[in-house]
Image (tube, rainbow, N blue to C red; front, side, top):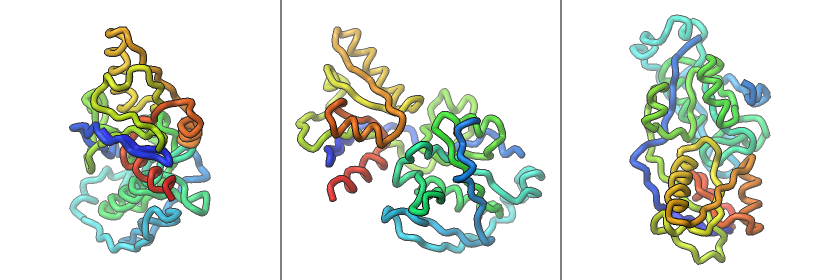
Amino acid sequence: MTISRLPVRTLRGLAAGTASAALAFSLAGCGGDSEAATTTEGAAGKVTVGRLSNGAARQTVLDVPEVKSLNAELPAAVRKRGTLVIAVGALPAGSPPLEYVGGDQKTLTGSEPDLGRLVAAVLGLRPEVKNFTWENMFVGVDSGKADVAFSNVTDTEERKKKYEFASYRRDNLAFEVPKKSTWTFGDYRALAGKTVAVGSGTNQEKILLEWQARLAGEGKQLTVKHYQDSNSTYLALASGRIDAYFGPNPGVSYHVTQSAR
């Protein structure tokens, strides 16, 4: 597992044997989604990645040819519509470099929506990217408001009972702590007496709560905190209200590099 210190250091460590994934309930065709951040893009065969990324990526235009054999396998309604509706869970504050609102305060950028745009191009569809809260991203897929979610979704056994997954990277997790902290993580016992923030409804929350239960069984305490968005979490970390934040390694590592500047 990684530990990061604030301006931050990363405590790496839990490389889960699972992978972050795109999830699709069905290509069919919630409160919390943002229509202002919904965009339908693109000239056929051209995909712009790294757009308005605030320095997290270099904007690049890629030629991505349609694979007609894949397009032929799509449901007729989707082919007729001509769009792939992509859900990302970047509300309210986003998680760079994975998924967040770009420098124009409108465009959804980051590795997750960009991968969705590339997939849409391969399928011969135009991407329509919709922004949701983490929880409502799943509601969007369930309700047919979105065809697919590209986000930091771990393909757990429980989720695979309901959704289909296409995995594309390892689900490494990390702890982020203030730079002055001397704490290190070896296993769950290192969390005794600590206060740790984690995202609600996430796989890392499930892991943290399991550790909390194990510590409780040993007569020790781990306090778990939830905050509305990443900005609130980092304020709590900087002010000493929490000892650490437990989250996806890409977001933690990126925040460490930005905070160290």
